[in-house]
Image 1: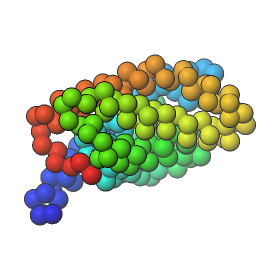
Image 2: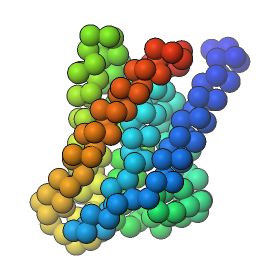
Image 3: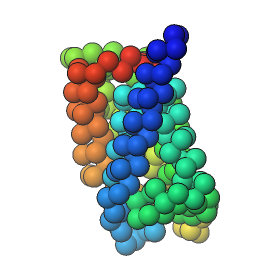
Length: 187
């Protein structure tokens, strides 16, 4: 990889990290039944994986989560600090870090990014983005909040309609951006 390619990938990674931060400016919507709000930032996680691939997508999310851990109030609602990783949303945040790896790997193993397979790309983001994040988040929520795992998993049903819309929008946006801008990162 040349220096020019490295600079390009790092610039794109920084831009996607900034996008995840901007999506945090939209306040979370409290669900009421659990202490985890509905947020728009997970769409940024999906976009990181879609646009940057598994390596740089994970770097973008890790950079974002590192800034949050340092105390910057970048999560929806102005939350930040290492304590958020131990709270009810901690499992979701850890899953955000792993989601680009999973999405990127599945995208690389399938013809999902080709024009006729948009439905496969949406399915991958639904499975590796929504289902994976919600299951990991529910496991941590059950442990942290003294809920049963089944109750935590059932409470995640409140997120599914919005997550399906956000994941589908992320795929549509990513396909449009990839058609205009050469991200050049598929791995």
